[in-house]
Image (cartoon, rainbow, N blue to C red; front, side):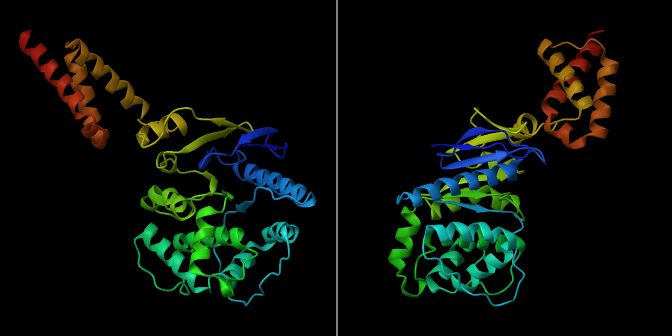
Length: 324
């Protein structure tokens, strides 16, 4: 499904394909990733309001912004939402004080035993940490995942009376409810080991959800098979056509993030040694020996990685010396 977003800030007017199980957007700082998610959120809200006015049901969406840690200790009141229009207005207002909104979710949804146990299980699965209660203060990464899970459950079940919720009804809703979930910088506060299994875990728990997320993490681009990857550049999304599933991270850094895999001097020298190995001939043995000595002293880690090429070139140079 494509959704039209209007020009806003650095983002150009464009149609965005959002029908994939997982869509990941990456790009430089200030390239418009957050602006794009907000534009998508507004486009979804407009469509849903139009459907509501016509008495129809529309595609439901949820935007989860960054900086999601809750520190407030104040008690909150549960929002009373009578219909989709109320829900849309409340969601928009929640961005003004998102920490208060998250505190409400913790006070009035996390207190349900079924929800509580489900999220404890998710924390165990994602972090390999067994927790029995969520009232204590955990690391920012764990707190962030708690908030993401609570936000998705709330968006699916905002009109549910949790006091009479059965376990079967809860899991039926999680497995069947389609929801477009937009998460800004999903990897925030998370160790790379956690990042590597995060998307798969969320999709396992919310299989009917479509995830649209922004990231600065090269690792996330390689750890879910059924995903679309977009680079945001000059205000527009460009789809990455290549299969990045478990691609070598050095290639990801070099090709997608424009980070040099090797220092330019080392790259030049290793290419020269590679050519010598392919030709099985060294034209200047003294130069090659000096180059190899410098590589091993200046870049010991890279020299170990490319040891086979370096050693072969060194041996060819030694044979040349013996033959002269």
